[in-house]
Image (tube, rainbow, N blue to C red; front, side, top):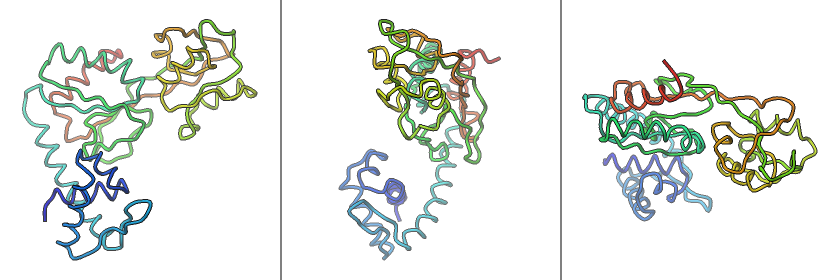
Length: 278
């Protein structure tokens, strides 16, 4: 049995479609479909029910899925341990964060890292999804919630301050609001803004703080933004709505197998210096 076929099987099982699996693994949909058929023929079992909405695991597929997860865990453990050895500060480092934090905070640390260690290439993925450190979807992740995966080294990196903003050329307090999309409607700043402007209509909604800042500067309404983003976005000014919005913690995490990886340690050092950690 080919391990690559099991990787494809897991990607299809997780993504639910050949297209999602192809995007995850960087292959084509026909290749995904062909390798799934080869795996099913090798095992003599139908692993997926093909439906109009995608691929659904059969009972036999669920059994294979559990075994494949254990094989994947062992294989990735070997890779992590191998990558964590050696003294050279070079190679690819996959980092994930929100869009604004990556653009306005981490890029500064990346520039400092490259000055000292030009052999390191940082791949920054700005994604609202909670990427898996165990599956090497990222080597280092920055997010606003603690990690609950096993074997993750994590710590609270900093407290981010937020403020209310409006367009420089607009009214003192605009009559509409700009906020997070429905998937993030439970965030504290969303409730804070609605409590202070309960009758204001919704003007724009997005999971991207960068997009919120841009439309706010164009005069669409009031937005609550991280000050690291709002204070440097042209066309924005802070406004007073009676008190300050709630701040958020940023957590940093990586798999324990990578704790000795030189390029990861070097990048963490630059991030700590940037945010004022000892």
